[in-house]
Amino acid sequence: MWSRMFALRFPQLYPARTFNLCDVSRNFNSLVVCGARGPRPRYPRVWKSQKRIGTISKSQKLLSSIKGLSNVKEEVYGALDSFVAWDLEFPLIVVKKTLKMLEAEKEWKRIIQVIKWMLSKGQGKTMGTYYTLLNALAEDGRLDEAEELWTRIFSRNLESLPRVFFGKMISIYYKHDMHEKMFEVFADMEELGVIPDKSIVVMMGNVFKKLGMQDKYERLHKKYPPPKWEYRYIKGQRVRIKMKHLTGSDGEAESNLPNHESESFSEQDDLQFMLHTHDHTVQLQDEEQPNLAQHQ
Image (tube, rainbow, N blue to C red; front, side):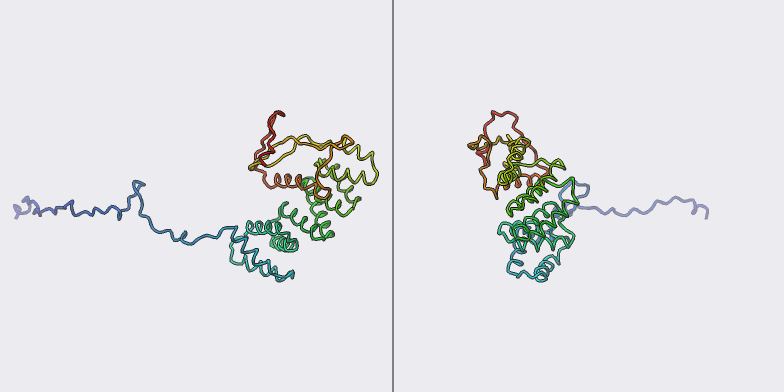
């Protein structure tokens, strides 16, 4: 019995199963290689299968949806609400482009309605929006609302109000021959240290000459002489260019722009500078460099 217990027995050897390398599939496209050592299998991108609608086409669609409506507030607001009902976020860029299209077509009433609707949603509270609303109110002949908006903006942004707002209000009062209001706005500019541009100086000088205030006219041009340089936007860059003044019979610089349009260039440049704060300033240091006005 003991001999059986201590007997050494080796396990029975079974024939090993051999693998044929030829049986392995050679279709490497079905393999997924881990560790970033090969290309992953490409699946169709379902989330990019549908075409996206750009902001320009959406703004054109918004323009067509509100252009044929009447001036009833509820009808316009209802169309705008139904347009943005399915958007997860407020389409601010689309509305801004629509405002630009309406401004090009001089649809001032529709611009006022769209901006007031946008402000009621708590969106687009920027200086550019308020400037567009102020311009639309003035062009539509609603001077009381324009003055109310100006008073509100001026009281809230006393020391940080851009110069284009002062120029716009002075031009509005200049068109309506409201000289006392012009003097008030100009006095606020001097008190706040805002340097007037060429168009403001020209309009104030014309009023002083019209009212027979020759001494104030001379002091105005002595304090704010015509600038030697002006800023233009050439290919997206702000470039300083030497100005050319037309000299009248009295030897003083005069503007070749009409009285009611003399502020167009300066306001446009200031507004672009206000909206494009990331633009780089390119200055021409040497006065003998060639004039770049031919590129415009």
